[in-house]
Image 1 (tube, one colour):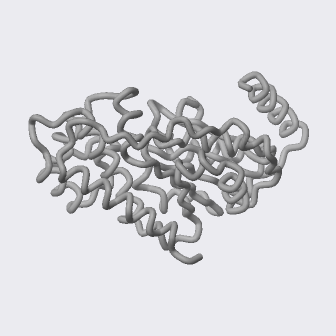
Image 2 (cartoon, one colour):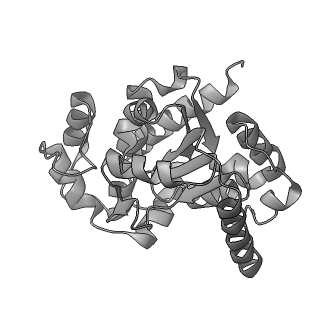
Length: 264
């Protein structure tokens, strides 16, 4: 499967070079780290109309943060694909600004159940508790604190305790990164679509087709969703979390799910 995917990407790039088309739309893939954004990028890469930029691509990112807008604009001008797709994980506080700067643009915000996101995060990263402490004290020196509302910062300060576990720190990060969706009023923005990780992996044909339709992407077929599986959906409660943090994350997740149930 990986070999076929690599061959597909190579052949797609060759076709785009032979028949270049100007960029007609920019797509930002947003969400908390370890929420399934890589999977969604692979889904979008399955269209012959896209060029995708992961956060590991040095042309567009430095240490996982998006380069200055003029650099991204230059990459867009040089692109030979009509749909320019780029990750925006460290830039969650700037989604509206980015869509305005790169209009026409749309955003896919991936939401994953906080329990599975926490388990995945603590396997991949660390230092969550010191980050929580630093942010609660007002530090906004990096992307984690950039754009954080006073209300969120006060909440982090009220909940912080020295005996917090890394899982609890990861859950807090899931909250303060995802709450930016509501603080930016993205629920009311027709350019933004929520993508629930669990729906994507459990109903891949339906969900991938809906994403392609939202973006106006051509080329949807069964093979685009064939690599997706639901083995990572477990919803196991992490250890060492206070009831207050559990309730905080559950309430935010419920707000997201309420949007999904809202009539179109």
